[in-house]
Length: 232
Image (cartoon, rainbow, N blue to C red; front, top):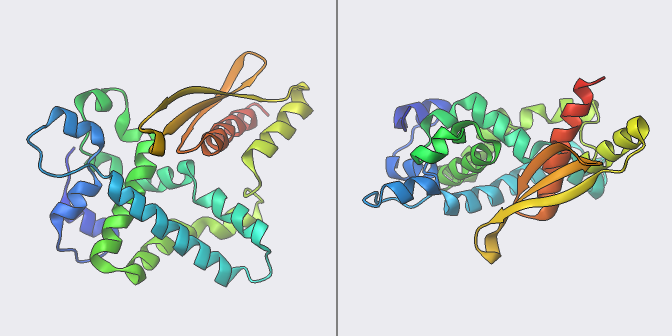
């Protein structure tokens, strides 16, 4: 498993030139700790850029395709597809995990398949694609590789708020209101990442990560919903 620029070009279906840029997009910060001689930075700055590109393109797509939907619905539609589990599943399908540059420790603990890392990599690659090829090429990629599932998510009403749906299910089935607890946090104050657990009584039903407590709670609720659905 290693970064393969030709494979990246094949995945993105674009003729790229800046190999170094895309290698950075696949560089997890843990890799820098073990390889002080490595000249590239981590993918975090590209992830920041890619996140903004993704928000714009998904918002524009929804604005143009769902003209009768009010702002609140459009926000829920976007959140259901542009979220960590959804983005990570597409990154996994595209084979991003195989090309990540990770520390040995991160790899040993399953980093190549960790949702948060995969989702961040998806955004970092999008940031690199925007840097080299611009918005129109990014639009084609995002619509082909992520937003294709928007119609199905909306028709099945999977866009509804995960926390609300899990609370409804938990109260209906067990008569218990979910409780969310912060399990861990890391990073500088201006860019913290949170890990949150959702509990029914003392039983942990799901863990989630995000750059805010609210996003981490939504991620945890998604995991808990998946679990409760398997018990039906």
